[in-house]
Amino acid sequence: GRDKAEYMTSLFRSVLGFPKEGINFRDFMPVLEDAKGLQILLEGLEKALPVPADSFDSVAGLEARGFLFGPALAARLGKGFIAVRKAGKLPPPVIGEDYTLEYGQARVEVESDAVSSGERVLIVDDLIATGGTAKAAADLIRKCGGIIAGFSFVMQLEGLDGIDSLGPYPTSTLVSMPA
Ligand code: PRP
Ligand code: MG
Image 1 (cartoon, rainbow, N blue to C red):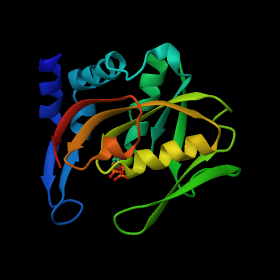
Image 2 (tube, helix red, strand yellow; image 1 turned 30 degrees about the vertical axis):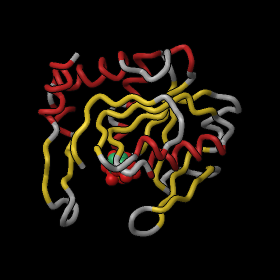
Image 3 (tube, rainbow, N blue to C red; image 1 turned 180 degrees about the vertical axis):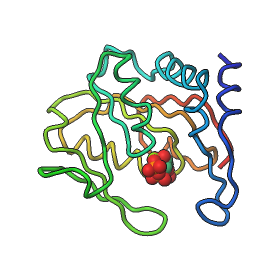
């Protein structure tokens, strides 16, 4: 409940001016380092799934921080895990999706047999800010023939319309903070 959300929020460390001036970096690592925090994180994501667990087939996590808890969540749910990686890390054949960041271009990739046609996928990441990363992952999974069941985030940054930018998908976030 609310106490757990407050406890988890308290574990995020805020670092002003990282990675550049004007950014208030929300550091997620202390949540993982805290035994209780890690339990609350996994239990919270499982309880707050945006859709019932039997309405999706697998969990996709976004490199890098989505890799830190996505496989654990997938295992708790009895699902497999799909790694959505930054470009150039996976051996061929891969399927990729280019997207635009605030400065410049980026690309995410999956191994080309990672997603089956019609596979229903829950996308997870630690944090949604602009939504650019999660949107690119969703576009990539659709390109592979997958169906987006929904999105789960640990943290939402307020005022950036990240969730709206994803489209009309069921979405859950555990905690929320100003950008
Ligand atoms: C961070 C965060 C999300 C993304 C959110 O990842 O982990 O994946 O940014 O931002 P957005 O909603 O504006 O796209 P980042 O690529 O900075 O680093 P990471 O490799 O440590 O996950
Ligand atoms: Mg990330």
